[in-house]
Image (tube, rainbow, N blue to C red; front, side):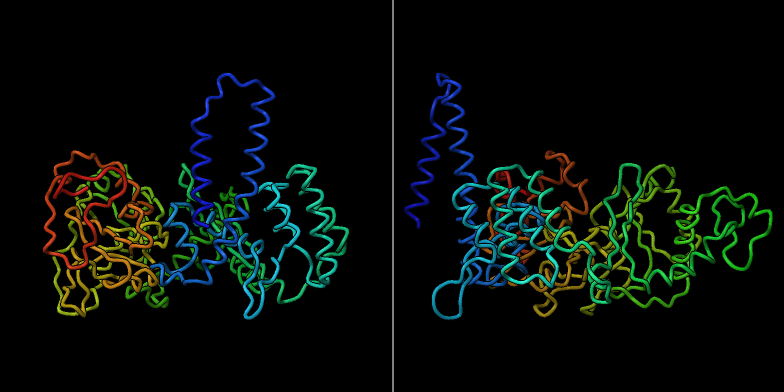
Length: 481
């Protein structure tokens, strides 16, 4: 296997060294055809290797909490791309049997066509998604014929034509559609949101069960009625019955009234004090901002979940519930000089950590601050560490447990009060040590900042990993990246 990989690497080097300036058009097309075919075949090898790797070790032994994280950290790919590769490896690689020879792939025809370079990655995606849409009553023989028909179509047509053919076959196979039942409804239930747009708006998409809509139906009937919860009124009606003048002056659409009703219902829930606690804090909105933005009322604040809120909305929200507002002077790293003789951080410390870190500090983790725990960065509490806010950071539950001096991740606090994560050797490729997902503004810091050249006192931390792997060019000796 190693010899074959070395030969492949040498062949690619030879190909890169070729000069194509004197080649004719037919010769260039022939080269591109060969590259396309071999490029379609290579994923088949990757699926087999990845499937075998999953039988040889575990994500925990690799220093990660899941195989998706192993792939995304090791090769710096997105979690969605890692999930796609894992899914295709499960479907297209030979399966490991408990005893005896390996079992064929779950999609044998697709795997064979890919190994011969007859179909592309786009074809594979259409086929596997179409196979997943087959009704549950379809028997194995019909499933095999359906897959074989799709592969034959893919070998002679493009992804669009393949998708149209698959959709038509699925329709003809079950023209009446699935019979509604509770299991199918429960599987489809969902509420998802889009990324926040440039205008600050967020789009929600929902598929509600009959029970869920029955609840919101009556709430909308009350709070989304004309004249109710109208932000344009000097004194909006949020209880009782609106006056006739409020009803007549309400020019909002039904969609706008339902939006305003959701705000009012959320405020009522937050003000009730009956929502319990979230990671040691009462369920409240926590927003961080700078003193300059707050005084000018022209900036923005950022919630613990990563939502950007205009300052005017921040001030207005403060009048409705006991929210928390953490104010920084030019966003300095130091938060509260609070030292505690307990392992558990105080509510004030949690608030400042949520405001400072914005979410899990481990690189690549997208868990927001509301879903994180407090992590002792330099030294664990059991090893004599202090619960000082300047030595604490946010980490989701899985990443917090992944910190292990012996064989896992290690953390340290930089001079800028940024939590740095050092991966275990099997995942260390010199990648970034900081998580920029929740605080992209850190990428804009100038490299010649005075704080950037402050020497690191490596003797003050016990969880410090290698100081010369920060991603990109190595920093000067003894200086921070």
